[in-house]
Image (cartoon, rainbow, N blue to C red; front, side, top):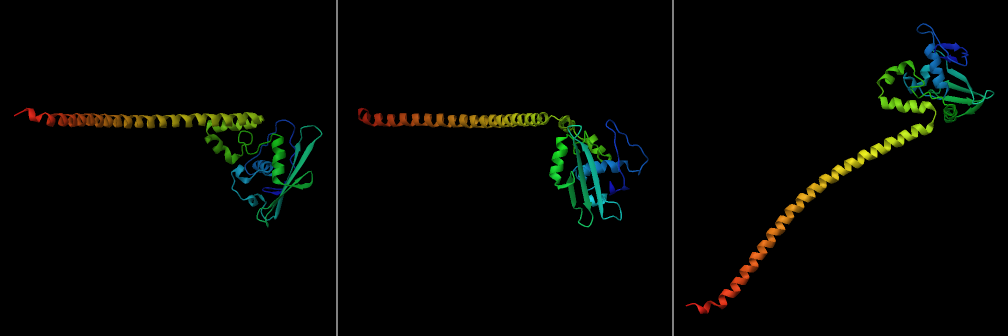
Length: 224
């Protein structure tokens, strides 16, 4: 790290297993965490420290740089990722991979291929995001754990399962709606059937009345 937050020029050499960084407040522990996140293509939002990356440049300096060496899949393959941040360009950044200019998307793709996930709170938990992690719903934490496990299919299967579950809920809602509509239509049909029966009965009585008036006048002369 050069001119990055509290560090003017420092090199951190972690060991191959578990590493602990201990020190009093303000000694730069969180600075190393921030450098890991931003140097590997992450954004300031992940750190919970605002959105302006210029704030990570040391006071009075115009540029900060972070260089990280990642161990590849094989013992002889290492990747050197570098990020430069410029104050005068309103936080513009440049990325380099193996000393050659590259893009942020390419760096993120490399980091993801090595199963490093700085945007996953179950594997990378900055100090300012501890509260957000504690408030996260259990279902959300489960999904993040699945992503951190490294098996991409696991998270995809979970997403499909959620879609199927939502589909079942939607079908149940449609079924309930259709049942209500059926009940309404059945009631309307019963009312219409009653009207039809009344009309048919009225027509039947009218026909009898016409028939009666047809017969009676023809026989009226028989009576004095």
